Image (cartoon, rainbow, N blue to C red; front, top):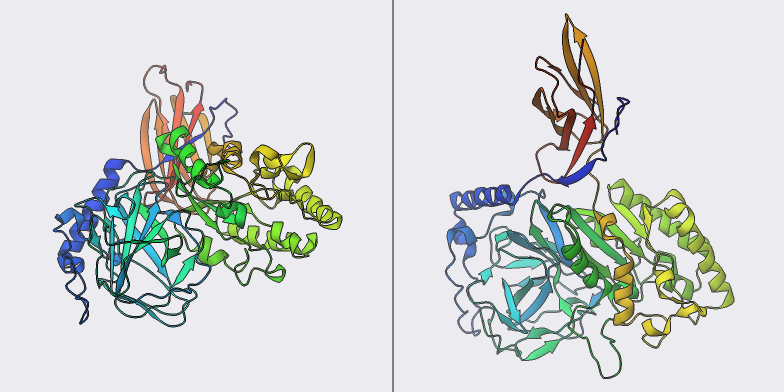
Length: 548
């Protein structure tokens, strides 16, 4: 925004730090880990009696050592993969290893993971956790395996309903890389899980001991279509602009994404609309505007806690599955179809919408909402209620002022000839869920540039001054954001940097125009949150040459 009366170019935003600075930061973190005795953190847990020797972890170079969590705050960390835990497993494990495979939507220079025991019947002890690049199936890439630590220890106990984050470990990853997370459980263990892994994960036989270090994965003979323990993977990448969370029920969870037509099975191919969207982000947005896309859908859940969902409704799990993630800048919200099916009114649904949207926006997170998509089983009354909810969402293109944008999946999926059902080429056959073609259509409908968060708000005022016969160019930059900013001002007559400009305060400098009028009559202002990281606002203001 400008207040000088001159024409200004459109402000742009970009990331505040470069890959080089990211590498420097990681090197400093690694040095800190060495100074604190970091080599001990990479030691494997001793196997319990009767389990057999644990495979030795490979020797790692200093830059690959685990980083103590105390040395890394949340700046530069972004959640790049997630799946929400939803129930306790009926399958128990004992003295064996499990290998989960996660696909990152964005990469970075380091990784940390979240483990949960949300629905366990007692505390869970994970005796050793390994992380490596996946080589496909249960195999891992040789030389990439490392033992994770938790507060410096290789084993961790997770209380009932609790969670832990691992210490960071340096490992280079790129967008769409797959990471294998392997757990050794030395004793009988009841686990929590997510039902729709969307791929095979892998288990070694009961009683086979610690096989975490297996490179070929040949011993992981059981296919497991569920995801155990791991619920989020963060990457350290200060060049990322943010993380966008898809939040909702089965349409988010990917039901139908394995359906690619007669004789075709897309299981394990990552064909959910969120997967397609993540690939679009990488392919279509410039390097300075990349965001991670993660999926926090749980099938069968509702928006409102009074409409069902068994405690997994959108209101109740918002803290765990969205607000507790890192670097979240946006949420794509799809909820309400099960609320309607369970007999809830539009007033109840909209009350939950308002509550969720308010909490997200209070946290500085933009909210993008889709109207409720068709369902052939709805009664006339349920369709009437759906129409009321959808009119609220579409009003003003911003949910009647309560959200930030509307992504209209209903318009994408509904059958023009039968708007209470899905368009047949997109239908799995149940009239509710989208097949692979429908998933692709949803992803294609989303304007990826809208997912990029704006930089901090500033007001730039440029004026000509004349003092004692000397012309000056006076530049004032006011911080309209709610955090302190570092501000750089560049003109044809000089430049200046300001650190820690408080919210509501201004950075001011008058530059003497002693030279002949310059060809470049542009002031460039760059503003970023103090301390680096996040997004920058870059504003260019065209001005007349100062003259007395």
